[in-house]
Length: 179
Image 1 (cartoon, one colour):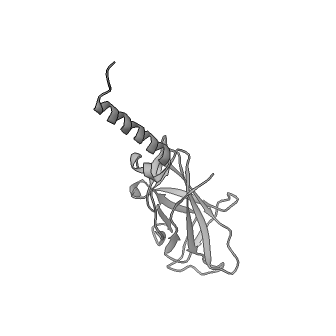
Image 2 (cartoon, one colour):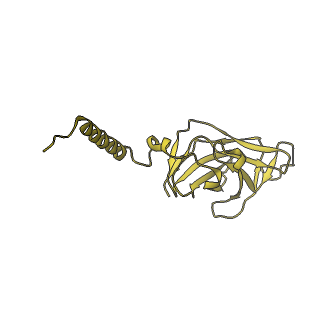
Image 3 (cartoon, rainbow, N blue to C red):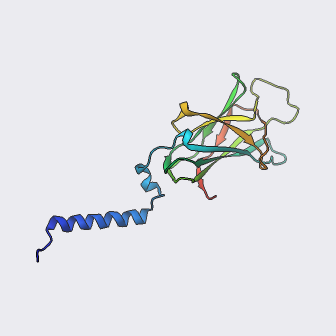
């Protein structure tokens, strides 16, 4: 009977170590993110939900939900682009706040990014800073040419017109959500 060579023993040990590392890290973790392609706008499903306005506040909150509808997992790293336009005139765009980490988004996985904007009170006369629309333009991080429109809806799913009185929208870092 032949003894296994030193090279075969080392190769077997490395294989077992790699398999154990994959089992510990899990395929959906940030450690596996470099193995997957970047998420693209067309491979994602976008939903914009404007939350019920809280009394006695000028801020309005919304939630941008992002789901992977692609064939396989992808890596979502950074803040998505988010803009609300009034035709070719004024616009409000989101500015990310906080630190983002790469998220390995499995097929069917969902992310949520919180949004907050200055809501115009009812009866405010139109002015240069006011932007009103029921559509927003979104794109995945670093995929701006692939942007697409998404309809703003209330919590019941009804189409809703957003009226913004500032040119900046606050966006928190996207987080994985359980759905």
